[in-house]
Amino acid sequence: MFLNNNELDISLNFNKLSRQLKQNTCNLLARLRSIHEDSLFIKEIFQQFPNYPTFANLRCGLWYYPSFHSTCYFKSTDGHVYHWHFSFSRLNLHVLKQALFSKKCLIVDSTRKGKIFPDSFLKTIPIWCCVFNRVLEYLKFKDLNKDLNGQLNNKLILNLNFVSENEKSQIENKIDEWVNEVLKSVKNGELNLNEFIELFDNKPLQCIYISKRTDLSTLQNINNNTNIENDFIPIILVSASDPDHLIKNKSWEYIQGAGDDHESWSLGLTPFLFWNNLNDLINCQTNEECEYLVKQLILKQSKNGKNDKMIQLNSIASLHCKNNNLNNNLNNNLNSLGNMIVKDSINVDNNKLNEELNILLNAIEIGKTNLFVGVYNNFSTFEELNNLFNDKNIFICCSEEENILQYSNGQVFPLIENKKKKRNFEDYLGIVLEYVKINLLKSKNIYILGKFGKNEEIILVIAILCSFYNLENVFVGEFKDRLDKQIIRKKLLFIQSFIYDVAPSRNLLKNLNRYFLS
Image (tube, rainbow, N blue to C red; front, side, top):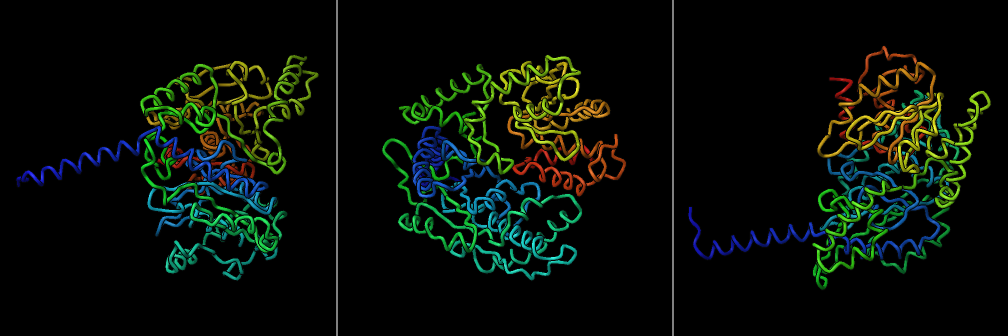
């Protein structure tokens, strides 16, 4: 079949337009300017709700404002039609705790062209609210030994402007199943919700939706309406995207949901670097200039050995701590801990030492397992980190190093996943577990450290619990029961009873299952 000249011209023009469209959506400068423009709307919302705890829904939401109280991880895929899911690996208990404590919270996300709200807002979070409403009401006012049987009044509330009645009905049919799974985990001791039960006062969590189509004059009424706070706990969901934006804007084109899928366009730029260099980046004259600047910023950061820092909220106390206070006290804590370590070991107060160490590493112990999870971002070198440990405590760092680094009080392993080495974690896990076993047998505390304490670190702790602890999470030297996915999930639930904001990647969970179950 041959094309005539007119058809050939149309085909060529279409291909040219397709290439241009793809180039425009990958245009780094246009994306950064779009993000900045959307952030002005987020700033306006934050000013309307000044006392609300703010969360960026990973990963897209983190781009849209320079600072949040913390992050959360509600996946849109858990709300896709016919794939509705309540995730036990992403319980987001830190959000639940803050919402119950403050009686309110605000979450920011974005979505691509053609939509106003992401599915994470329309279904994933409402499902999460409904499940925990029912779970907490049942645990506080009902007998746990009885089945739920759908008797509670906390119904699923969805935005029916975007979700059909038919879809809502199908999701409702699955709610009790998820609720009973959570209750079973609590009853079996796999998940501890005592702190949440104490905070719960029978006010249900309920979503309120805000987008650029929302009449902002009504927001102050919502914020000042005491009846709302008396009746339920508002979970305000703010979509940064502008579905009505004029695409062509002077010399650049607006991209809705520009922060999404950053691996495909960011060249390694992070939200932290973006906001620290905002004016220089968005004032670039060309995309080529912008790309060059990003590469220079990343190179500079790499040479300085600095990592992005993310505020982590793991307890009610830390929710109300200013990050600046932590930084101001950091040197004092380092000096104090260093002085304690150089003393004769007979005179060292190990409890005091561990307390100081936990502050510096933002570390939390997983029950009574002698396993701690924390971050190493407060240290410029691993040598500096090593000097803070002694013969009672060792560290294991999940890093991007190419090889294992050995120190007198710990080791650094190349466990962080990347596109080139997606099985790094699986390849080195056996070596790490052997090192862990040797030190657990010596009754040492083991600190599992990483950049954020949410991903590789969590998977490693699951692997350790599955290898050397029994079903009650007591160290026995070797796990002798038959291991399966349910046990792996139970270990993750156990960890989430202590670290509320874990977010292990699906790829790492698959690696873990493959390592233990293949």
